[in-house]
Length: 509
Image (cartoon, rainbow, N blue to C red):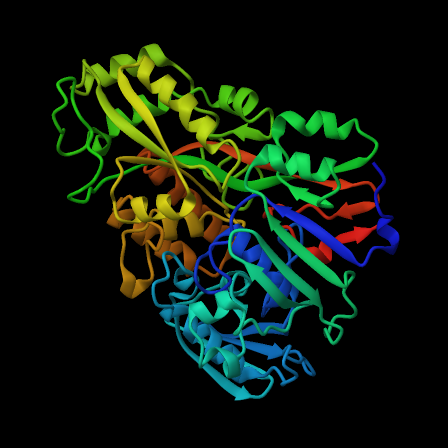
């Protein structure tokens, strides 16, 4: 098959591995949403492929007191409608993030300490926090700035329709077909120079095998997360190139600590509902953890595209734990512990997993179901689309859920506060704590850590908090992902630890 020469190509076609849940950049904090948003919108502070902070719409920033940050904005930036970017857009955006109607899990946890955002002049913003917030620049790198002019009269539906998709980024919105594709065109007036591509198409290809078929056929030029079993074949095919980076994302099993009235029950051998759920018992969670062969999951199910873990962060990342290894796989001990916990006959439950977001999530869930069944926890798998999974989990309608966390803040504070923090909307804590795990002592540790200015002290406090959560098996870590991309020959991609696939990081070579 003959392919067009990429060096002369004006278009790049990208295969996304997960569905876009919303084009509203403040609606849902998910990797595919960030991927597309960062082509159109920009944050005050951006992150390079390794996570290092870089100037974006802000050229510089500094703390001018323990609780006030000053951001100096970039001069001469235009919105896609031709109007000038200014401080009023920043004020509007940071206030909007807290109040997006219907958002299932937004960004409010990233700015929960912000009490005031004010425009000093057109190019200067002061942000006041309730407590010292040394990570604020990193936290703001997740929040895209939207136009006050467009956003003040728009809803999430207006973003999804394209009407409000007016950004400052390298590409302009052209067309969106829900769950199929997003089309973008080059922003010739971008402040950072002429973008590489005249036209960018993001194709939603959630089926891993179909992504391989599409790139083999020349229907797409870049595919994220190629099927693990195809990696060696693609590596040895001169028509393609592979790029990879160790990822931050961690997969975990989430036991639920509260259940809604209509929740899927955990039942005994006679089919009777067990209340409260056995998973609220730490010894049971330890048994379930010990029954999981993490190395087997990483090597046999994930085909080496994951690394087994017993903690939240990969080795070497700020606030990771150097002395925490992979938990021992010991089904015999797990079965004994289950009996000692009061369940010698085991019990039955359903493990819910999404089938259109993370590759091999269903296969991992099925493998875990077999492992648990061997110790007497009779497990069936409910594989559902992400939209259904979010609804079930956020409404506490399942007993246990398999999910993953991006760790894109490059430290443990986000997972400890947003996933495991006691739900408190007033403090924007526990934004994603669908399981309703609660440990007030842990909350206090995390709060103290996140307002500690001294870097070494903050890392120690986050490590101590991580140990508490891990010792309690608030969630059960499984493995960290390795991020892969495959391109057609003549294209290159700068691989990112956060797993984003950005059009401006693709070059023709």
